[in-house]
Each structure stands twice: as structure tokens, then as C-alpha cells.
Picture 1 (cartoon, rainbow, N blue to C red):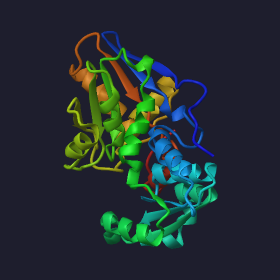
Picture 2 (cartoon, rainbow, N blue to C red; picture 1 turned 60 degrees about the horizontal axis):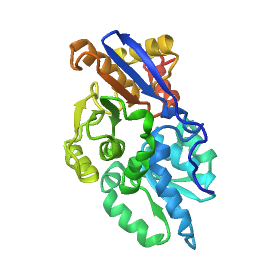
Picture 3 (tube, rainbow, N blue to C red; picture 1 turned 30 degrees about the vertical axis):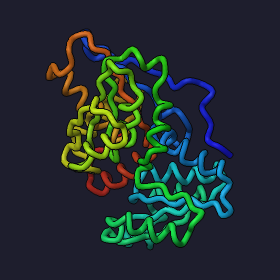
Length: 302
């Protein structure tokens, strides 16, 4: 079974915070009930093109951490396409307690098998990929975060006639595939801003290689580091949910929106700018984040 284009367009909601700035959010988190946001579009061509080739022994392999949105999404995509999946999970210590992890339990419930590897092994994913391709020659091996050329082409689906009239297009940046797709396929007059939640100096060049354009800026939005959640992040996310009835996860979209609010207050955007932010989903990660916050006796994300 192929991943399908949704029958209803993804809604765009206005977020009213400044009378001189028009801020909107495109609800890609609603594109699919379980494969939310950019994950759906990054997998769209990867999965569909693979299935269309009708491999003799179909098998999907990918990489991710303990609370990876990508791992959860690939597990569901594999189930929908009736293709076995294997997740190489960072951290061998998880092997004995993965059932206590909501993301991995969800992925397992959707048929994914796991191989837990050391952090040292995980850092050399190119070597791992070579070994895996030799062992499973028919397998589709999707990189961590799903970023590759097919993913970039899939992100094109996040843009349509309704996104053409915005001055700025904004997205959170992890592995770079989503911003590369937006940069590659947006209108010539549009400015693209990536809110970088990781400390990765190679991202600029990686994105340029994928998009072949330089129409984007990267802005640090890590708030202390990838996966780190401070009290101000929690306060912002909870107030945003109460004010606009839109849930944000704390690793990607939550940090992007918080930084955008700060930039509007700082006067970064010219008056009367029209800004579109892409909600890239990942709300499944809130449960895992709250597990960690609860252990630290801190306020939870609503």
C-alpha cells in the first residue's frame, strides 16, 4: 500500500500576536494521525518509490534515538506499506528497558524490530549502512531523520498555492531535509528561515548541496542544546497551547515558535510582513519528554 496525498488540504491558522506582523502556522501535524508533519512528506517518495520497484525481499531499515519521531513514523509507514522494518537505536543500555519507552513501544506495536548499538557505533552510520546494504541487498535504508534527495522532493508537497503569498517561510531544522525542500521549491521572492535546534556546523553546506540555492538563513534555536528543555521552553509551550489551542512539542516546533516570538519583539521582521511557520508534528515526543521532566520534579508539558 502506498502513502497517499490527503484528500483535504492542510489548514493554515493565523496566530495573532502583533498588529504589524501577520503570523500563520501550517498544521502539517494534521497531515496523518500517526505519521505527522514533515516525516510524512520525507517518507512519501522514499516509501512509494521503493514499493513501486517491487523488491524481492522488501525491508526498511533506519536509525534513531530513544524518542525519535522518525523511528515512530517509519514504523507506521512500514505497517501501512506491509513492509518489515528495523530500527537501529542509539544506546545499547535501552535493550533491557525499551518497553518503558513510549516511542519505542509505539514503534514495536507497529511491527518494528530493534537493534540497539553503542553510541560509538552509531556515530559511524556510513560504515553501518555499507554493512547493512551488503547483508540486506534489497532493503531500503533511510538515513537518520529521513533526509535524502527523495525526502527533499517530498517536502515540495508542503508548498502549494496557499503558501505563495507569504514573505517568510519558517521551519525547525534538525537534519536539514525539510528546509532544503522548502528552499528548493519556494517562490523566488520568498525568504526561508531555518531554526536550528542542533549544534551542527555542517548543516549550512549540507542544505546547500540538497537545495542548490542560498535563499535561506539558519538561526540558532537550540536553547541550550539538542533535546534540552528549559523551564522557559515549557512555559512558552503551555501558554501557546492555552492561547491558541495548538500543541507544540519541545524539541523542534516549540523552540522555533518561541524564537519567532522573540524575533518579532526584537523587530527582526519588517512591518506588515507575512510569516508562515510549518508545524512539523512530532507530538508523540511529548509523552517521553514528560517522563524525563517528571523524574526531575519539573513542570510538565500540557
